[in-house]
Structure formats: structure tokens, C-alpha cells
Image 1 (cartoon, one colour):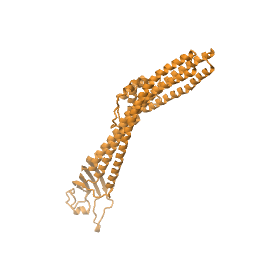
Image 2 (tube, one colour):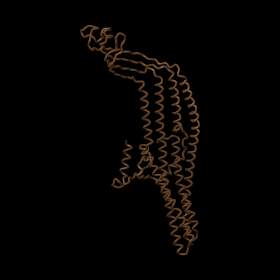
Image 3 (cartoon, helix red, strand yellow):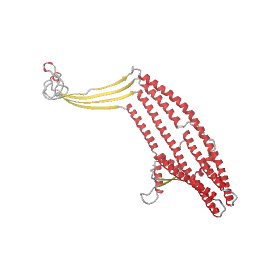
Image 4 (tube, one colour):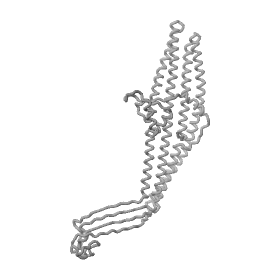
Amino acid sequence: MKRRLAVAVMALASWVGVSAQQTQTITLTLDEAVSIALSDNPTIKVANLEIERQKYERKQTEANLWPQLSATGQYLYAIEKQSMAKGLSFGADNTISASGNLNMALFAPSVYAALNMNKIQLENAVEQARASKITLVAEVKKAYFNILLAEQSIKVLHASEANIEETVENTRNMYKAGLAAEYDLLTAEVQLSNLRPTIIQTENSVEIAKLLLKMYLGLPQETEVEVTGTLDEFRDAVLAGGASLPTDYSENTDLRTLDINLKMLNAQKRLANSARIPTIAAFMQGSYTGNDARNPLSSMMGGGAGAGSGTGAGTSTKNEFWWQYPINVGVQVSIPIFAGFANTSKVKSIQNSIRQLEMQRDYLEESIYVQVRSALNTLITARETMLANEKTVVQAQKAFDIAQTRYTAGAGTILEVNSTELQLTRSSLNYSQAIYDYLSAKADYDKIIGKEE
């Protein structure tokens, strides 16, 4: 509730304009984006509903251990009664009956085994919800970082555009003054023209990245999303990440899910074996039945328990009811003897599935180990690449300044300017890409080891 209230406050504070038809703009930090995703993403909602469903499934199984009470009522009118020889008939014209049954399991191995399996199914639902959260957090982070990368790339490209425009203007002035060849002017203009499609493509990538982030956050597509910060602000986090990271993957969601599936198969095996164990149940039955006593057979029996009307037994001519109310209690034992080897085949089938899953788990564990090592190597590579590109950017900027100064003074060529400007742009983009690669790899690493926020 607090999380939803915070989102509502942010949305209200970020509302652009006073008209209800105007576009809503929300500015988010990384932590706020993750928080909204964990609250409003449909995948998380579905996972939580599955947990709730499994709880109801367990309650349904528990109901088999509670007393079971049922009652029935019946009225019967005989249009034609059954008769014997010489016109002797028996039965009643009217019969009213009510009955009740009370049953309670005293020893039910199959129910106990089913309850244990329900418990494991609930555990599996909880783990699936946890896996959904971990995966969603990783995807939200990568989408957020992707926006920062695209926005920083646009800044680099616009800076490059400004440098080239300055070069074009200087070259044009020099050409008009007869200090530069037309070739130099054409070369500078072509480089500027080649850069603009890249800027447009990068701007489009920002919009696509924002659409993806809004999808993860469960926000309407018409909502405008802005993210705070820059990739440069994560430089210190990249450097701090040089410390040794753990390789423990015991919390990996795929591995834990397989372990739970193994537990579930063993529970199914116990459930199948429980079908061979006797069950014991207590029961109580009671009924209350009344039928009219005006028939020869009831007269021969004395008119019934309720026939006393002052006319004497056996001589009644009135419709008088004979009431009975038997009550029985007992214990029922059910012993399975032979079921055509169905249980045996079922148990062997489950054992086969257990062996398959055990082999899959061994293979998965090796695969996860490789993924962890690969993620760690990617982190180290991205960190070292960032440090190298950081130095390269400084060097490229210095080289570009020298080349531009030489060209303006008439000592250099346009090719030197274009080459150094291209190297500056490339090194700046590579620097941003290295930071993104580290942050993206860190998100994948957290997902692999099963780290929760």
C-alpha cells in the first residue's frame, strides 16, 4: 500500500500541465523503477495469485480430515402398493423420512501424503514468485541502463556534431579565403552528413528502450518516462566492483526449482505407496421415518408404536403414523488387496522420473557454474575496458585539439582532423559502452546467483 501511495505521489508531482488530456510524465530513479515493477508488473501479480491458489488447494485437502456431515429428507406417496396373495398388501400410503450421516477419518495415509505434497507445491509457487521477481529486477535494471547508454551516446554524438560543424565552418571560411581546397570542404561536409543518421537512429533507440521499461513497470504506453542520472555516475560503482565477488550459486532459482521438483516427485511416490495402506474411518448414521399404519400388515403387527388412539391395537381405521428412529455408530476399515499392479507401475514410473531429474540437476549445476564464471569474467573485462577507454578519451581529446589547431594554422590536413575527431567519438562511445556492459553483466550475475533486492 505504501509503495502504491508513493507511486501515486510521484505521478501527481510529475504531472505536466493542468489539463486532464495532457501527457503525464514520470521521472524515476533506478530504485523507484524497481519498486514500481515489483508492485505493478503482471508477472508478479500472477505469481502472487498462484501462491494464494496453492493455499486454497491445501485447505481443500485438509477438509478430508474434518468430519463430514450430510442430511437428506424424503416424502413418499404410494399410488399403488405392493400386494401379496389374497389381497394382502404391505407398505404405507404416506412415508416421511429424514436421515443424517456423520463420517470422520481416523487414519488416512493418502490424505497425509497429499497434504505433504500440497506443502511442496506451495513451496514451489513461492520459489516461482521469487524467480519472477529476480528476473524482473534484472530486466528492469538492464532496460534502465540501456536508456542511460542511449542518452549518453546522443550527448557524445551531438558533441561530435558540434565539432564537425565547427570544422565545416572553419573550412568554409578558409576555402573562401583561398587557404583550403574544395576537397577539404567537401570532406568535412560529408562527415557531418554521415553522422546525422546515426544520431537519429540513437534517438529512436531511446524511445524503444523507454517503451520496454514502461512494459516492465506496468505503466500505460502514453505515459512519458524520464530517468535520472548518467552512466558516468556509476563509474565509482564499477571500480568498487573490482573486489572479489562470491561464486556461491546455491540460491539460483533454476537449481532450487529442480530441488523442489525432486521433493515433489518423492511426495508423489509416497502418495502412490499410501494407496496400499489400510484406512480407518468412524461413522454415525441416524434416521427418523414415519409411515401411516392403515394397512392389514401394520394391523397384524399391532398398529405401530404411534397407533395408540383409544380404539385398541389392530382396530384403527385412521391414518396414524408409525415412527422409527434407529441410530448406528461404527468404525470402517478399508484394506486394499489387489489393484492390478497399478500402484506398482505408478511407483516405478515416478522413480524413473526422479532419476531423470537427478541427471538434469547435475547437468544444470555444471551449466550454472559456467554461467557464474562467465559473468565474473565479463565483469572484469568490462571494468578493465572502462579504465582503458577512460585514458583513451583523454588522449583522443588532446589529439583532436592538436589536429584542429594545426589545421587552422595551415600546418595540418582535414584528414587529420576527421581522423582524430572520429577516434574521439569512438573512444567516448566505447567508454560509455564499457560502463553499460559492466552494469548489465552485474544484473545478470545477480540473477544467476539468485540475489534478491
